[in-house]
Length: 157
Image (cartoon, rainbow, N blue to C red; front, side):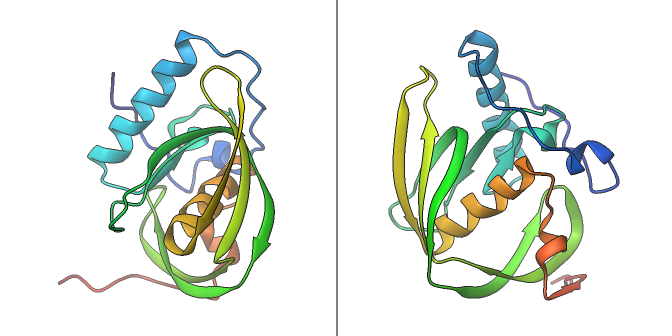
Protein backbone atom coordinates (compact mmCIF):
# COMPACT_ATOMS: atom_id res chain seq x y z
CA UNK A 1 0.00 0.00 0.00
CA UNK A 2 1.13 3.52 -0.70
CA UNK A 3 -0.28 6.92 0.04
CA UNK A 4 -1.07 8.85 -3.13
CA UNK A 5 -1.12 12.58 -3.79
CA UNK A 6 -4.56 14.19 -3.60
CA UNK A 7 -5.27 16.50 -6.53
CA UNK A 8 -6.73 19.90 -5.70
CA UNK A 9 -9.46 21.93 -7.36
CA UNK A 10 -7.21 23.78 -9.82
CA UNK A 11 -6.26 20.44 -11.44
CA UNK A 12 -8.23 20.04 -14.72
CA UNK A 13 -8.28 16.24 -14.29
CA UNK A 14 -10.90 16.69 -11.52
CA UNK A 15 -13.31 18.08 -14.15
CA UNK A 16 -13.12 15.02 -16.40
CA UNK A 17 -15.59 12.13 -16.60
CA UNK A 18 -14.15 8.87 -15.24
CA UNK A 19 -14.13 5.66 -17.25
CA UNK A 20 -16.00 2.54 -16.22
CA UNK A 21 -13.82 -0.20 -14.75
CA UNK A 22 -13.73 -3.31 -16.95
CA UNK A 23 -10.59 -5.02 -15.65
CA UNK A 24 -10.80 -6.50 -12.15
CA UNK A 25 -7.21 -7.34 -11.28
CA UNK A 26 -4.40 -6.81 -8.78
CA UNK A 27 -3.80 -3.27 -10.02
CA UNK A 28 -7.40 -2.41 -9.12
CA UNK A 29 -6.95 -3.97 -5.66
CA UNK A 30 -3.78 -1.92 -5.21
CA UNK A 31 -5.60 1.28 -6.22
CA UNK A 32 -8.38 0.62 -3.70
CA UNK A 33 -5.91 -0.13 -0.91
CA UNK A 34 -3.91 3.00 -1.74
CA UNK A 35 -7.10 5.07 -1.76
CA UNK A 36 -8.06 3.82 1.71
CA UNK A 37 -4.58 4.65 3.03
CA UNK A 38 -4.66 8.11 1.41
CA UNK A 39 -8.16 8.86 2.74
CA UNK A 40 -7.25 7.70 6.26
CA UNK A 41 -4.07 9.73 6.40
CA UNK A 42 -5.73 12.90 5.05
CA UNK A 43 -8.04 12.28 7.11
CA UNK A 44 -11.28 12.10 5.18
CA UNK A 45 -14.53 10.13 4.96
CA UNK A 46 -14.49 9.52 1.22
CA UNK A 47 -12.19 9.57 -1.78
CA UNK A 48 -12.75 9.08 -5.51
CA UNK A 49 -10.09 7.75 -7.90
CA UNK A 50 -9.89 11.04 -9.88
CA UNK A 51 -8.78 12.76 -6.67
CA UNK A 52 -5.60 10.66 -6.82
CA UNK A 53 -5.18 11.16 -10.57
CA UNK A 54 -6.90 7.99 -11.83
CA UNK A 55 -9.90 8.47 -14.16
CA UNK A 56 -11.67 5.26 -13.15
CA UNK A 57 -15.09 4.89 -11.52
CA UNK A 58 -13.89 3.83 -8.07
CA UNK A 59 -14.71 5.34 -4.67
CA UNK A 60 -13.88 4.52 -1.06
CA UNK A 61 -16.09 5.69 1.81
CA UNK A 62 -15.95 5.56 5.61
CA UNK A 63 -18.64 7.13 7.76
CA UNK A 64 -16.55 6.90 10.91
CA UNK A 65 -18.86 9.38 12.60
CA UNK A 66 -21.71 6.87 12.79
CA UNK A 67 -22.17 4.21 15.50
CA UNK A 68 -22.57 1.39 12.94
CA UNK A 69 -19.47 2.40 10.99
CA UNK A 70 -19.58 1.55 7.27
CA UNK A 71 -16.23 1.35 5.49
CA UNK A 72 -16.29 0.14 1.92
CA UNK A 73 -15.27 0.60 -1.69
CA UNK A 74 -17.53 0.78 -4.74
CA UNK A 75 -16.55 0.12 -8.34
CA UNK A 76 -18.72 1.66 -11.09
CA UNK A 77 -21.28 3.03 -8.59
CA UNK A 78 -24.61 4.22 -9.97
CA UNK A 79 -27.20 5.92 -7.79
CA UNK A 80 -30.46 4.33 -8.87
CA UNK A 81 -32.86 6.06 -6.47
CA UNK A 82 -32.86 9.26 -4.43
CA UNK A 83 -35.39 10.25 -1.78
CA UNK A 84 -35.71 13.00 0.79
CA UNK A 85 -33.60 16.11 1.02
CA UNK A 86 -31.33 17.71 3.55
CA UNK A 87 -29.02 20.68 3.48
CA UNK A 88 -25.73 20.36 5.35
CA UNK A 89 -22.13 21.54 5.35
CA UNK A 90 -19.59 19.70 3.21
CA UNK A 91 -15.87 19.88 2.72
CA UNK A 92 -13.55 18.06 0.34
CA UNK A 93 -9.96 16.85 0.40
CA UNK A 94 -9.56 18.31 -3.11
CA UNK A 95 -10.92 21.72 -2.07
CA UNK A 96 -8.85 22.48 1.02
CA UNK A 97 -9.72 25.41 3.25
CA UNK A 98 -13.28 25.72 1.94
CA UNK A 99 -16.65 24.41 3.03
CA UNK A 100 -20.12 24.90 1.64
CA UNK A 101 -23.78 24.20 2.24
CA UNK A 102 -25.07 21.52 -0.16
CA UNK A 103 -28.50 19.91 -0.69
CA UNK A 104 -28.38 16.14 -1.00
CA UNK A 105 -30.83 13.25 -0.89
CA UNK A 106 -31.14 11.57 2.52
CA UNK A 107 -32.01 8.07 1.28
CA UNK A 108 -30.40 6.51 -1.80
CA UNK A 109 -29.99 3.15 -3.50
CA UNK A 110 -26.66 2.43 -5.17
CA UNK A 111 -25.73 -0.28 -7.65
CA UNK A 112 -21.99 -1.05 -7.81
CA UNK A 113 -19.47 -3.84 -8.33
CA UNK A 114 -17.09 -5.58 -5.96
CA UNK A 115 -13.45 -6.44 -6.66
CA UNK A 116 -14.51 -9.63 -8.46
CA UNK A 117 -16.88 -7.82 -10.82
CA UNK A 118 -20.01 -9.00 -8.99
CA UNK A 119 -22.93 -6.57 -8.98
CA UNK A 120 -24.11 -5.40 -5.56
CA UNK A 121 -26.78 -3.03 -4.27
CA UNK A 122 -26.86 -0.90 -1.16
CA UNK A 123 -29.31 1.39 0.56
CA UNK A 124 -27.65 4.34 2.29
CA UNK A 125 -29.19 7.00 4.48
CA UNK A 126 -28.26 10.36 5.96
CA UNK A 127 -24.51 11.04 6.34
CA UNK A 128 -23.47 7.84 4.55
CA UNK A 129 -25.75 8.74 1.61
CA UNK A 130 -24.20 12.22 1.55
CA UNK A 131 -20.67 10.82 1.35
CA UNK A 132 -21.57 8.47 -1.52
CA UNK A 133 -23.30 11.23 -3.51
CA UNK A 134 -20.31 13.55 -3.02
CA UNK A 135 -17.86 10.88 -4.22
CA UNK A 136 -20.00 9.79 -7.19
CA UNK A 137 -20.09 13.46 -8.26
CA UNK A 138 -16.27 13.36 -8.45
CA UNK A 139 -16.53 10.53 -10.98
CA UNK A 140 -18.50 12.89 -13.23
CA UNK A 141 -16.14 15.85 -12.81
CA UNK A 142 -18.40 17.66 -10.32
CA UNK A 143 -17.07 19.30 -7.16
CA UNK A 144 -19.22 20.18 -4.15
CA UNK A 145 -18.52 23.85 -4.89
CA UNK A 146 -20.57 23.45 -8.10
CA UNK A 147 -23.65 22.55 -6.02
CA UNK A 148 -23.02 24.67 -2.94
CA UNK A 149 -25.61 27.23 -1.89
CA UNK A 150 -22.78 29.15 -0.25
CA UNK A 151 -19.02 28.66 0.09
CA UNK A 152 -16.87 29.92 2.91
CA UNK A 153 -13.53 29.48 4.67
CA UNK A 154 -14.16 27.87 8.06
CA UNK A 155 -12.82 29.60 11.14
CA UNK A 156 -9.97 27.88 12.92
CA UNK A 157 -10.59 26.74 16.47
